[in-house]
Image (cartoon, rainbow, N blue to C red; front, side, top):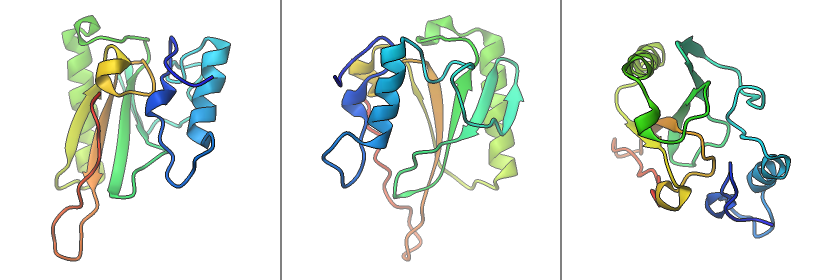
Length: 151
């Protein structure tokens, strides 16, 4: 059954062009049935681009159609709220963002964090994480709007 679980929230899992359970929703439901968090190290199948302290940065597997690049910054420790972060966490996150901007020659974009109750954050996974998003550019030289709902 889809909905809000302990580690996942399929209410926010969107798969374009499909009215059936999408691959992403099925992926989330599998973890919820097992009682595990998809972002905790033993379950995370993505390969880290870089590691810094207790944090890793990854290319996001599910990328929006108006998104040129989309990265996830995920902590090794399962944390859900900003108050659980230490100053060393912020230093590591900052270092990963700077490295990614330089490495991928990012000229602009957005940085967002999903934390806390998924009713408010709109997250599909209840493990605090950051999104570094670069929009696609249109023929008119302007960026395409990226839909990143909160709540």
